[in-house]
Image 1 (cartoon, rainbow, N blue to C red):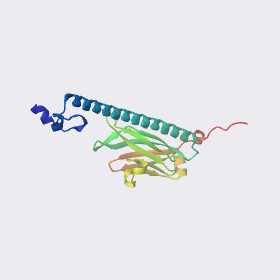
Image 2 (cartoon, rainbow, N blue to C red; image 1 turned 180 degrees about the vertical axis):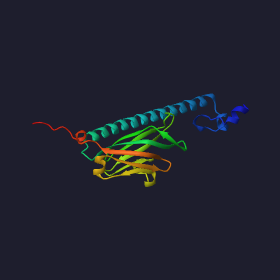
Image 3 (tube, rainbow, N blue to C red; image 1 turned 90 degrees about the vertical axis):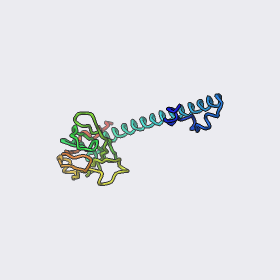
Image 4 (spheres, helix red, strand yellow; image 1 turned 90 degrees about the horizontal axis):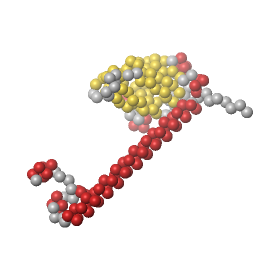
Length: 192
């Protein structure tokens, strides 16, 4: 009995112990049944929320792929960060090469894995036509000091541009970016 009291036992519906011991077995059974129903409803709500998030992610991925296919020349850039280090678990770790395929108007969440494949972090990347940003937070929540950026003109991106990036406690390395070739961005024309 001392063990149970020492663990701070919890009764259904957050009923205090003083009240619980005064309840009849039928009342205790009803309280347990009500708690089980509440727990089941909460579990079902979490499952529904997870399914909705998954459906939203699939919809967003399909929308991004369509936008990539429909992008005009200059609206889509591909980048590689290699060699690279990322700030993972409180220290700089060498990471596998990071590849990005970005289109203006869309943010892409990228996963950066350490060389051993034991740890990873998620970063958020975007392209606005002249700036490729790799940020610690998503687009609406980022601050300039949260992002490593490569800035170039359209002509530079067309030829391919390499710049060293370094952002405190985020990522550092060499990033190469160039525009997706025109033939990859142009939709086939219909013949009438």
